[in-house]
Image (cartoon, one colour):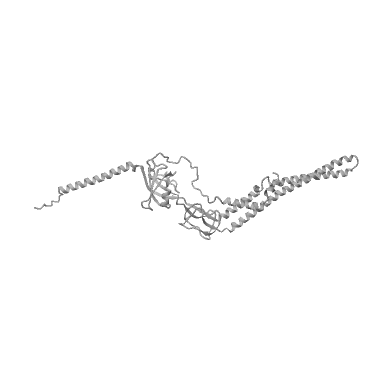
Amino acid sequence: MTEVDTGYPTSATRKNRKLAMIALSAFFLLIGVIWLLYYLIWGQFEVYTDDAYVNGNLVQIMSQIPGTIIEINTDDTFLVKKGQPLVRLDASDMKILFKRASANLAQTVREVRQSYEYVSQLQATLVLRKADWVKAQLDVKRRTGLLGEKAISREALQHYETALDAAEAQYQYALHHLYAAETLAGHTRLYQHPQVERAKANFRTAYLNLMRTTIIAPVTGYVGKRSAQLGQHVAVNTPMLAIIPLQDVWVDANYKESQLSHLRIGQPVTVTADAYDDVIYHGKVIGLNAGTGAAFSLLPPQNATGNWIKIVQRLPVRIGISVEDIKKHPLQIGLSVHATTNVHDTKGNRLAVIASQKSIYATDVYANQLADADKLIDKILHENSPDMESTWMRYPH
């Protein structure tokens, strides 16, 4: 006999379904247990956000002097090294001003030397006038006694007395003339004379302006936002291009305000970027911003109105990325990333409590400009005053 299909599941089918439901329930239970264990051991100590972006410095390159662009040595996406020439301006006017400052410095040194020599000349004149005055005093003294013996007339004695007055007046004139010359010369060495110092300052200004016709890169990085064009006349502080040092970037992770309770400075962070597959960056929390993004926006929200809807705010948290990770897998500014912060250790501070006492960013590409100018100044001074020391020794001090 054949088994008639009644439309109801057989006992074997019901048994198989029951086993399948038990297996499925056990599977979901296992998943739940695994998730619970993960949460208890790791998950509860992780704060995640995908509202995070790569940020970095944008070094604007501007001209410090007005001029016309005659050469551009770089372009967008190019790598430039610190100290590399980027843009050159027409230096014709600055060369003329530099030559004028050089000539003015040389002329000033000679004029000050001449004033020292003039002081020495007036000193000799003063000695001569004093000798004439003493001689006139002796002449009057000797002839005053002869007047009683009728050996000299009163008229002749009056001539000697008049000569004495004239000699004294000439001595006083020479003395005051010497004082005036000494005041002008000043009791300083030639190279430290105020007029020479002023000429040296003008020379340094002219030299710096000439050097600034070549605009150099203050940092190493990649060029972007180039707006400089050949033949363009640029004014002072005209933006020409930007340099982005991609070796020093960070992540700004915008965490919800409800996620901030356990965030602390120094906590480890793992970062993944949409631009790379299976690449994990390691970093740490550098600091929490002093205000939310809305508070620092151009038009901050005004909540003191009749109708108000609460919006969860986000606070930017700066995350530093390992330099080695950045070298292996560079990140460009603005890329989207995912940040997961391990908040297990909450012993750190939420905000910085010690003020930074060292430079965060610095460049030395301009450090030697004044030193080079001083070398040229010393050369001009010695060329125009080879016997400076002997000149100074003859001048009283």
